Image 1 (spheres, rainbow, N blue to C red):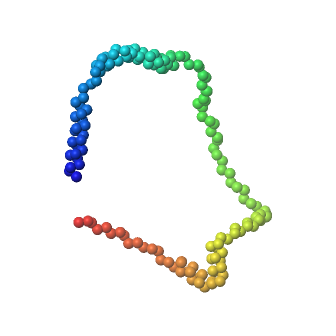
Image 2: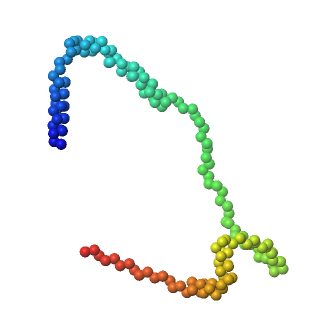
Image 3: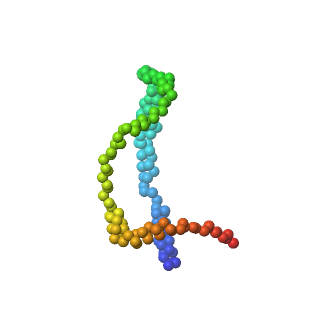
Amino acid sequence: MSEQPDKLDSILDAALRGYSNVEPSAGFEQRILRRVQTAPDVRRSWWKFGWGLVPVCVAPFVWIVMPTRDVPLPVLSLTPPPVPAVAQVVYPKTPSPAAKPRILPAARPLPLTAEERALLRFVQSQPEQARAALVLSAQIEPLTIEPLKIEELP
């Protein structure tokens, strides 16, 4: 493996030596000087860009100086709304003893869910077990949890 980088280095060095030892072609300097002399004057081209910025710079000043049209603002009254007099407590009328009680129509029972139907079948088929389950659930002692003890680390 140590031979591969050495071979690669020697190949690259040889190639670079070949590039660095080459002289420029004939007339190279004359071509460069001619191109510089015939190039357009770059100093004047910024004016084109500068004239384009003039409206952008002048617009904020014109916007500030231009008079705005007067728009009437709505007038708000600063007086508070009227406060009502002291509130009076209104008690409902008590029914007279001679009044007949109103009988409300019976509300329709809601349909039972599947769980409720299963519980009803269980209670109807085995009442002793259902009673024992209800009595046992009433006798369940509350759960007590001992305080958590955290030992210090050495």
